[in-house]
Amino acid sequence: MDDVDLLVSRLLHPDRLWSRSECLARPSPVPKTHGLYGWYFRAVPSEIDVSGCVRIAGCTLLYVGIAPTKALGHNGLPSTSSLRSRVRMHYAGNAESSTLRLTLCTLLAAELSLSRDWTRRSKSFGAGEAKLSEWMDHNAYVTCVEHPVPWSIERPVIVRLDLPLNLAHNRNHPFWMRLTAARSRRPRS
Image (cartoon, rainbow, N blue to C red; front, side):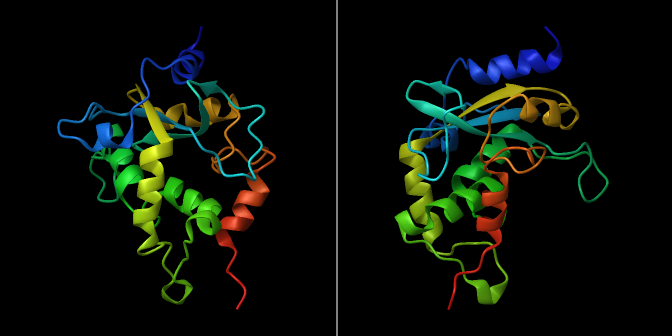
C-alpha cells in the first residue's frame, strides 16, 4: 500500500469523527500539525448526488482539505497553518476565509435564508454565518490525518475519492461545473 492509499484509507475509515463543539473546545482534539482533513455531513444539500460518496455512521464524506497548502507562508517563512487552525476556521470563521464555508453557504442559501452582500465584493454572508455555524454544529464532522507535506499528496488523494464539494483537482467531478457556477452567480435583481 503506497502513501496515498494509506491516507485515503485513514480518511475513509477514521478512528473518530469530531463535532464542531469538540474541535472548538480548549484543549482541542485536533492536532496542531500538518495533514489532511475529511468533512463528513449528516445532512447534505439536496442538489448533490451522493450515490458514489463514502458513508460512515450516517454521515457522508463530501470534502477533503489540507493544512497548510504550501510549505512557506506569504512572508516567505514556514507556514503556521495547521490542521487545528484550518478546522477551527472552517467551523467558526467566515466564507471569506474558508472555501468550505463559502460552498456550504452558497448551497444552503435558500434553506437557511442566507445572502451575500454583493456590493462590498465580499464572500462573507454577514449575519448568516452564524446560521451556517449552527447548521454545522448539527451536521458537520471532521477527521484528521497527519502528514508532513500534505500539498504533495492533495491531488492524488482527491482524484481517488468522490468529493462533490472539492473544486481544486476535481474538475472531472459531475458536480464541479454546477458548484463553480453557483459560487460565482449573483442573484438577479
